[in-house]
Image 1: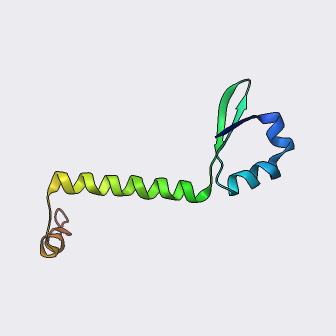
Image 2 (image 1 turned 90 degrees about the vertical axis):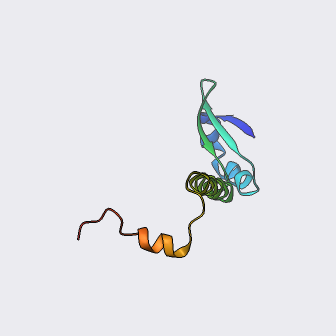
Length: 81
C-alpha cells in the first residue's frame, strides 16, 4: 500500500493508475490525512463477493436449512391477495 499527497497524485495520475492496474493500492492524502483510496477493480469485486457470502452464511445459520418446497411456499408469505 502506497501513500501519496494529493498534489503529487494530480501530477502522476497515469503512473498511479498503472500501479493500481498491477495490483497496488494507493492512498491519497491531504495535509497528512487519508482522503481517498484507489484499489484494483478486481479487489473491490472480491470484497463485495466475500461480503455477500458472509451475509448469506449468517442468514443460513439463523434460519437453518430450507427445502425448495419451503422456499417456494413462503415466497408470497405476507402478501395480500
